[in-house]
Length: 183
Image: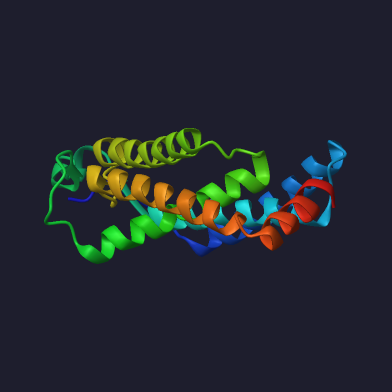
């Protein structure tokens, strides 16, 4: 009684997606007349970060639907924060968003703390809502968890503080200015 089933594997999706994003970022920067080595490397880092987040939060994906698929696994939906969260999951979710502040600054010039934290929060919220919809509609195998939202947001804040600490160094600040902004 499993209904229709489909598996979306990780590597056959993620590797081509990373390559496509690298090509698109190169073409985008070239078309805008902003192609520099530093900007291209920053865009590629952002591309592979997006691929890594997709892989960590969505893939592999096991889906099923149809009358025989049964009811959705609503036990996978956690809407109330709990202190019983697994430490490893919490730490991994914090780590996932640590690079976000640096990537937003390097690629888009976003350096405002509130804006960075909002982006991290809404990125995490969109992931959790996608997982929720997939659980309810196609019996997705992930968890929609408010604890993930909290830990991702905390990771964004820690990442912002770490990035601010890092660019206080004149050497790093000059490297960012020279490599990403001008060339």
